[in-house]
Image 1 (cartoon, rainbow, N blue to C red):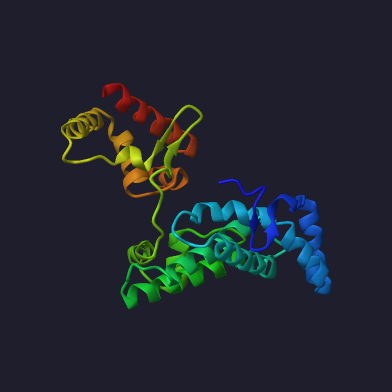
Image 2: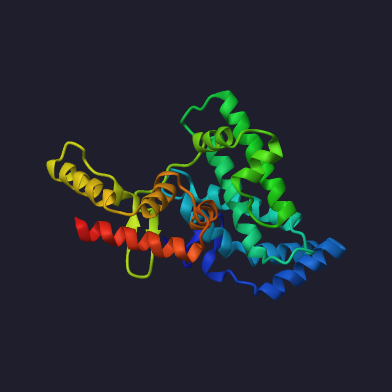
Length: 257
C-alpha cells in the first residue's frame, strides 16, 4: 500500500520530511536538555514516515487506517520519551518495536476473539515487561528475558502472547532469499484435494531424506518459529551456517518433489 500521496489523520503524507540520524540525535539531546516542545514536534513529524511503514503490517484487518496511524504516533511519542541517549543504538531501531507494541495492544484490546482473563493478564504483564526491558536494554528482549523479568515459565509466556497475537496474512513470508520467497499460503493446501495430498506425501518423503541437522533446523525454524540466530545458538553453529543449511534443505525438498 502506498502512502506517499494520501491524507491520513489529516496529514498529507507526500509533504512529510525524513530526518537524518544525526538530526534525530540532535533533537533528542535538545529535548532531554531543555524539554523543547518545538524540538519534540519536529522529531515527531520527522518520523511519521516510519510510523506509516510500521502500520502497513497491521492494515487489512478492518481497522481504520487513521486510527492505526494515531496509535502508531502514540508509540512514537513513547519511544521519544523513553529513549536513552547513553546507549549506542539508532533511534529508528528502538522506535519500531515501541510503535508495533502500541498497535498490538490496541488490536488485542479490541479483538473480537475472546481470550481467558488469566491469559490476557499474563500477556499484559509480558508486554509491559517487554517495554521496560526495551527501554533498559535499548533493544527488543528475547522471550527468556521477558519470562525472567516477570517470574513466569517461558512456555506459559509464549502461550499467553500467542493467544493475543494478531492474525497473519497468507502473503506473510516465512522464508526469503534473493532468489525465492516462501509464503504462508505456500504451506497451506486443501486436505480434500488429491493433488495436495500427494504433494504432502512427497514432501514428507523428501524431508525423511534430509540429514538429522537439516531436519532439526527446519523444525525449529518453521514449526517452532525460532529465528536463525536463536537456532544457531541452540544447536551450536553460526547464523550463516544455519542460513546455508536451511536454504540447502529447502532446495533439496523442491528438487525431490
